[in-house]
Image (cartoon, rainbow, N blue to C red; front, side, top):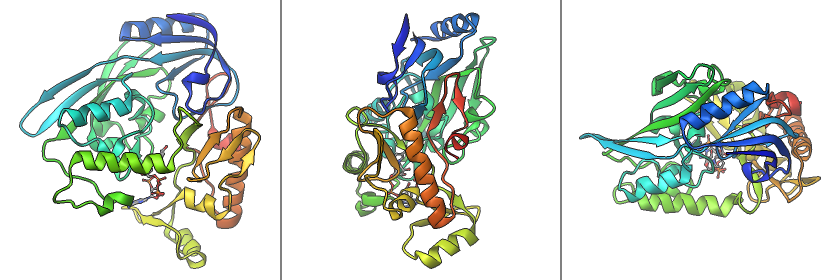
Length: 345
Ligand code: NAP
């Protein structure tokens, strides 16, 4: 199905009100390929989108936004695990609910994350101590230039902190069409974050973990269907031990999490909050009152408003802590993705 000169406001959770030259919706691999070829034939840039929950449109997009809406969940099981083969266009939170209702736990810490399943491995979505890489078995993707389909097992996905091979080697000209998940039958709750720590690991149920995560998220994070936002705007900076020690000398209360490689993860939201920026506004953009890591669209923000706000935040944090924050959100210019750090530098 093709439409011309359409608003993308409903297609990005930031609710930036700009347009794309065309919008195409694909419900299966053939439609995906056909829409891709059609856009290529017109020499148009193509932006593949799932839920649009991790993008910032800087401007009008002079090309085709291709929405991946490939649906379907297939389940196989063996003695040890359930194996789910899930279409890239399924809503992530619906998958979490479906698995829980079917008695297949393992995704509950990742409840209420906006977006579609196909986007989950790209930035290795994570929350409350669980990342997609812990449950991913494989990713199916198509080379859109020759139609060849490849299955990458988890260890070939090069998962890292909010990172994967799909942001690098397989970034351009590839579409994720399905993701395989492996949910172990021997469930091990992850209760290391926030209110989850209060649950009893011997008696806790997957439903309790799910409910606790949902409550925590609803208390702190703006609902993107009401207030435009793209979740955490910046990544948590991972710094070397000397930099962390320097910050901790001046701010002993700073949250910090040692990483396996000896580096220290700092909480970007805390750093921003220390600069007294909660609620700070620029044009139609603002820093969320309850979680400084989330930038919100107050209703009529442009991409430029969000960029200016992000630049100001980055400067303030650098001046106070000598740490340069990097966006987690991907920036989309007129012709496609652009270097987000470069834009706010
Ligand atoms: P929070 O509890 O205020 O904690 C701030 C940061 O400290 C988190 O980002 C988290 O890093 C880190 N942290 C907290 N407890 C930790 C622990 N026990 N071990 C290691 N690191 C810890 O965070 P929040 O903003 O409410 O978010 C809660 C969870 O949801 C976090 O995992 C966060 O990543 C996730 N979340 C992600 C997005 C997104 O758009 N990417 C949006 C909202 C929430 P990590 O981020 O590395 O976990």
